[in-house]
Image 1 (tube, rainbow, N blue to C red):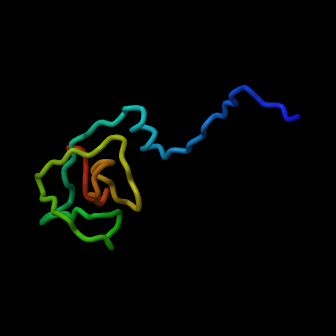
Image 2 (image 1 turned 90 degrees about the horizontal axis):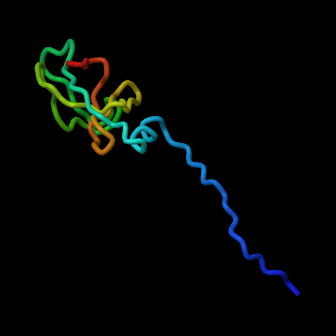
Length: 96
């Protein structure tokens, strides 16, 4: 005769999050205003983190954009926000 086990077995679920994902889960997302630096004509806003990605817009000197804090940075490019596919080179931006 086989015994039936009548209990629940609890196992912890371990999920490894990237730092920016952890901040989002904790509700720690905010925005900071940035402007360009060292740009005379315009800065390309790209669809991905690199110059190989197509330009989807332009950031002109004097314009200000709100970028997500904590920063999502990859290959020297910063993402505008976790839900946007817009990236800009960190070399040419600074807090306003």
